[in-house]
Every structure is written in C-alpha cells, then in structure tokens.
Length: 215
Image (cartoon, rainbow, N blue to C red; front, top):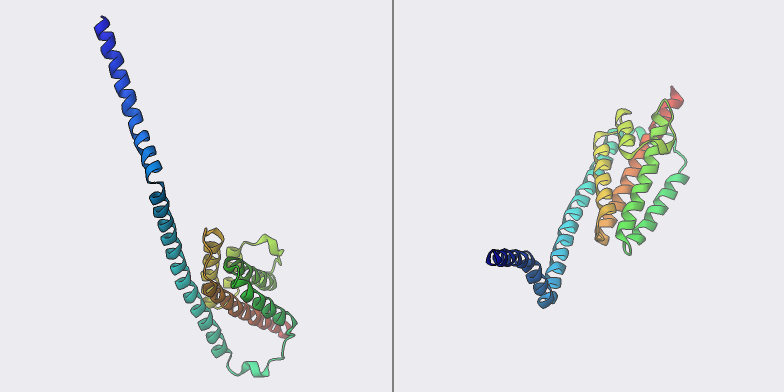
C-alpha cells in the first residue's frame, strides 16, 4: 500500500514538473536573450510602422489626385459661366486658406495633428453645406461625417468630390488610431487635399445660394 502511495506521489510530482518546465524555459530564454528579444521586437515594430507609412503615403497621394481631378472636372463643367457670376465675399475663404497654411507648418512638427486639423476644417465646411441644402436645417453636431457626406451626395455634390472626401475620411481615421506618426510630406499632401475639397465645397455652397436667390 505504501508502495502504491509512493508511486502516486511520484506521478503527481512528475506532472507538476511538466506543468512548470515550459514557463521556466521561457523565463530563462527571456533572461538570457533579453537584448536579442528586444532588438527583434524593435525591428518588428519598425517594420510594421514602415508598412503603415507606405500604405498611408500611397493612399494620401491617391486622395490628392482624386481631389485635383474633382476640382478640374468642376472647373471644366463651369466653363465660362464663372466669368458672369457675381463674385462672392472672400473673407471666409481667405480664412480657410490661412488656417491651411498654418496646418502645413504644423505638419512638419506633428503630422498626425495636421491631418486631424485639416479633416476638422472639411467637417465644418461639410456641415455648412449640408445645412444649406437640408430642408430640416439640422444643427451641425447632429450629423456624423458619414451622414454629412450622404446629405451632400443626395443634394447633387459631384461624385468625384464625394469620393475624395470618403478617401480623406478613411485616412483621417487611420491617422487618429495609429501608434506611429505619418510622415510630414504625407501630412502635407493631406492638407493640400483638404484645401481642394474646401474649394469644391465653397463653390457648391455659392452655386446653391445663387440658385436660391434666382429661384
């Protein structure tokens, strides 16, 4: 009986050792190769950050190209009509461009902050346009960015311009949740795209106001 008890105890000890062996081995490896493990993690983190920046940079260039195409398309469709239009007050537009210039300076120091600031300008301008075309005239804070885009799309805002805003919205979200800073050049591209989109929205607002006046 005592022999059986001894065998049982031995088996329990063996199982206990088996349970502990892997944590002990892992702990020893961490202690012995701590420097190498840290270097490996740093390289993996750096690689992930480089991949994020490469994708963000590519998407930002695409968004800029889309915004430029949208503006060119709008100018082409306007033709000579702009020459006969009554010039609109430029104070608010000058102010927007002044803020954009400031954001370009910010981009060299804090790229992600510049991206978020530029998107905020787009949001405010979208809210202004959406209020103008909405029959219910809702307060600005009641609409999400997606709802603002939908309202503009339904009001006849150019599809290519809507696409540009959607691209910038996705980029803004990526920058907001990224653990790494985007590059200064990429942030500058985003800010430039934001300025083009704001110009598109300003013209959309001007056209709607003129149509309302003549109606």
